[in-house]
Length: 104
Image 1 (cartoon, rainbow, N blue to C red):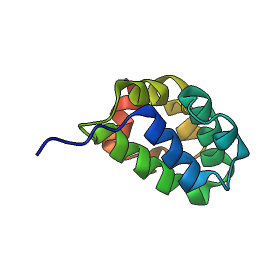
Image 2: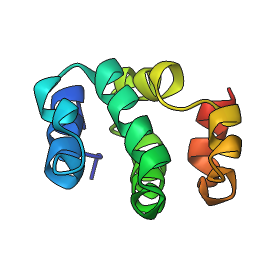
Image 3: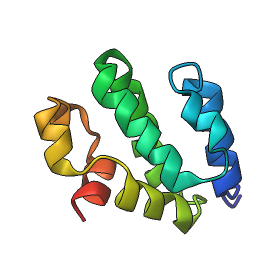
Image 4: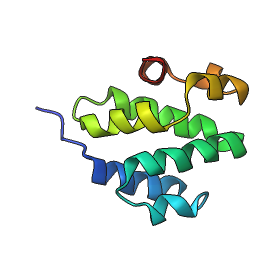
């Protein structure tokens, strides 16, 4: 059975449902994936207790066969870069699929 497509709108809604209580910007910028990635990056840095779950989720999304290319692009271009993750002490918690996307 083929994988169900996972588009940017569904991804955006999932971000809001999971972490909207930590950042009003996620809901304010619903559907604007690049802006939402910036908000999610701030959450990871300012709330390290939430970072592991966020990074795990993003790793699962980039590994998902049905994920739209726009999702990977938003993560690559607008989420934290590898240096930011290292400085924040989060680099060791990045799952391998997400690490390869962030590092390019």
